[in-house]
Image 1 (spheres, rainbow, N blue to C red):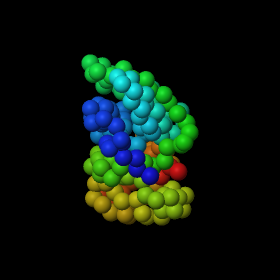
Image 2 (spheres, one colour):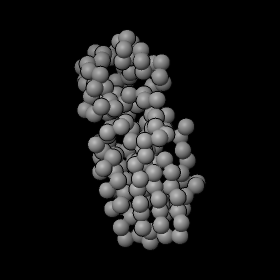
Image 3 (cartoon, rainbow, N blue to C red):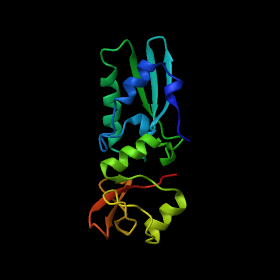
Image 4 (spheres, rainbow, N blue to C red):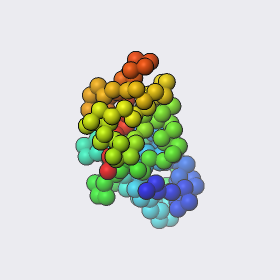
Length: 167
């Protein structure tokens, strides 16, 4: 479900968007997060549809502002529209994005069945971002943001966020 914008929009526009990061996870670009749904370019005008990771995500306002700032000084005027349909899913996070999450200390989402088992049944399947152990425990259904859960590694004792599988 990962959308390949790199080959569908002009490189200059892609590069500008790739520099805009998620304000809550600054190592993750909005491209790698997959919140850019569509980009339309007409001469020097760019229309961008942006999908929130969940309805009411407070980071979306900042992302919209950051996109507008990224285009300042370019040859393009930009309009950003927040859309709720189709809904964003965690399948839209690129492999590069998942690697960036893990390196940042946030466990990337696992597939739906495993996600439910970890969050609802206490299954030990979410790997610690510090030591890699799956001997982990859910501490809270909600972590530093609503799209994350808080886990603790029972081996190295480090707490870490897990980016929930959202579908």
